[in-house]
Amino acid sequence: MEIADVAMRYGGAEGTLALQGCSLSVQEGEFVAVVGPSGCGKSTLMRLVSGLWPASAGQVWVAGREVAGPVPLVGMAFQNPTLLPWRSILDNVMLPLEVVPAHRARLRAERAAYEAKAEALLKLVGLEGFGKRHPHQLSGGMQQRTSLCRALIHEPPLLMLDEPFSALDVFTREDLWAVLQDVWLERKPTVILVTHDLREAVYLADRVLVMSARPGRIIAERRVDFPRPRRLEATYDAEFNAVVAELRALIARARAGEEPDA
Amino acid sequence: MPDSRADSLATAARRQRRLEAALPWLVIGGAFFLWEAGVWLLGISPFILPAPSAVVQAGLRWWQPLMQDSLVTLGTTLLGFAMAIVFGLALGVAIGSSTLVYRGLYPLLIAFNSIPKVAVVPVLIVWFGIGIWPAVITAFLISFFPIVVNVATGIATVEPELRDVLRALGARPLDIVRKVGLPRAMPYFFASLKVAITVAFVGSIIAESVAPNAGIGRLMMVASSRFDVPLVFAGLVVTGVMGVLLYWIAERLERRVTGWATRGQEGLTPGG
Image (cartoon, rainbow over all chains, first blue to last red; front, side):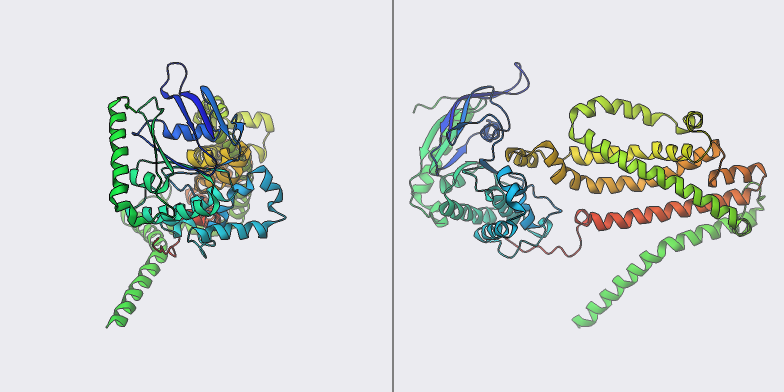
């Protein structure tokens, strides 16, 4: 995935400039986290990559094709699980299959196979046996796991996560970090995780990108080379915390509007 | 002893439920009793306010025309209401899913809804003549508006993130309406039905009183011109009973179709 010198302005020529001169590239199968001060245009970046909005300037490429409109190459999950309360968990997970053209044609004929796929995903995130339940019967963390399954069911090459764990309590959040790492290790999708939580970014990502204050662009990046699978306890090691501290300093400077020296 | 305590709690809960079920009847009975007692004690003339017993007598005496006319009113109301459901759903979906339609049509709709429907009835008579149609169409005109507004609200308030998820997958606007908008609008739709069915009665009865052809509205006009006030009240009571009955049906239907929105008590929430 490649973003070249993208700019995005809302509401006409006088509108807010959310992104400017924003460039980044992500390798296939790589896990990248994007951190930055709030309001720096991280969510805008997500919508550009998924083709929901056209960029005001610059180009976005995903899997060798320029993004001109919505293409089902992307799976998305947000801070809010946005499940449909009238559907069972299994039917919620299978929603994308009813929409993506390639799958909707085959869904009726191969329903059993697709259901098995959805069940396998639910098992992977620790929700085995919950398919028949409805969202309101599940806790917030379980709903977020379901949302993750829904993002993955059509096997998108790119997974975009917009602060997916920020509404959860600390213990649930850490559980889900481990779940997400397991999913990534097993399926190896390309992941872009937008987050405010530096520990989350460092624990999960191969590379952490730091965005500037609005108008947002990438001002620094930090590789994270800890071996996988990473253990949760490792997030309290000195090495780990050194990386977090380094990123925190970068963001503090970005908030103050300064340019980093590197 | 924990057992006896659980038992007494269960008994208390049962008593509470029984009281809740009996309460509407008790209140209605009490109101009629107060009404009756008030009329007797204050010596109010039956031309001003007939006692419930006089209303019941009138109702029994004229039960045949009362039944006939109320069936006519029920028929015209239901026909108008059915038209309102079809038209209201379609227009609500259009307004809720398209900003253009919303901007274009909403002011006109508001203006139209502000027109007193009594004023429209003479026009309807010119167009359709005396018959059931003025009543059907008045019932329709008065009851489609709440349906349109509620369905449009349900569809327009789909979470933007959910819309994004579906659009990014290549969903067309129609897919989003079908998979998310319409099911989401159902609780709003049923809430509006309960309002719409009661105002539909208002519509038919207005038309029946302005253009007395048949129906409970005409019956009440005729009765009041003969100063048969107890019969007027009998007509009002029958109308009220029909309204409550249809409201009850709408509510039953609502519970069956949109049970997910009211969240049953079975919701157990395991941690995780």
